[in-house]
Image (cartoon, rainbow, N blue to C red; front, side):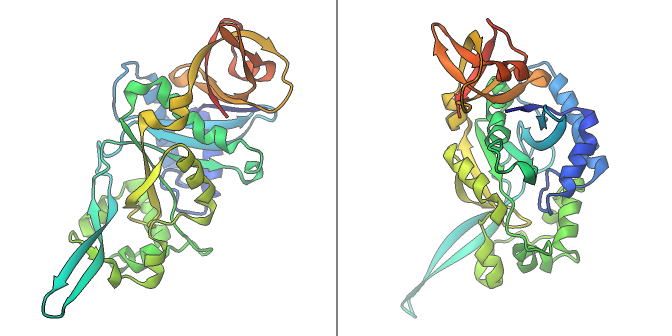
Length: 338
């Protein structure tokens, strides 16, 4: 397999913009705005260059490249912590029980509360894979490589990691959740609000939305049905997150109602199972990749899929993976079961 996960560079702008235009909306971390994407690449360059190994306000953008063609086929991002500069808003789904002695009845109501409970957590997001590659098996490389990066730079990330999944959006780019709730308070469509948020942040939500809890019974049926539900194209990503140990805990996106998933960083499966090993031999590949393999620090971080087998005090690595990573016998790599 010729796919390499590498760190993004400023000359990746056109490729990022092409992918951003193909998301179909709802990808806050990958807006179809060249100035915003350029700003992300400039910010990530500074973060990769920061040498002090401490928790900060870092953004790391990665690129999936098919080295056989030189074409960019995917991208993903990792944030060291959210809510450090601007609050990270979510809706928390809660419940309240009320009893009427006179009526002899108990009422249970569901509430949405605007909150910043998730401030300080790390985030993995901004994942997009070209449609032509979604059946090739490289999605797991794109998604899981971020966990190997986090492991390699553990001091730069928080003890809890979240992932937001895009909520339900129809073919016209409308969100039932937005139309049933926030759209009633703003004179803009979901698409316009989503683009504004991607460029300017979501402080306008906090400024204009009601501060009091909202009874979900007052929302439309369509809005209630999609709360906590991912977009149909995001269901595989949700299953992949669940396999890594992430869980939905009743927090949803304030725009489209998509689910927010959580995991304790050190308990993420890929991080927990990864091992640092020495390459004792480089051999010709004979079958499918058995491991996710990475090496390098910060801007030199790289990852790919490879065949890894025990060999004495180290491992053997297939020649193609060794070439992609630029490693030789005696070098240390990190690997996790594929």
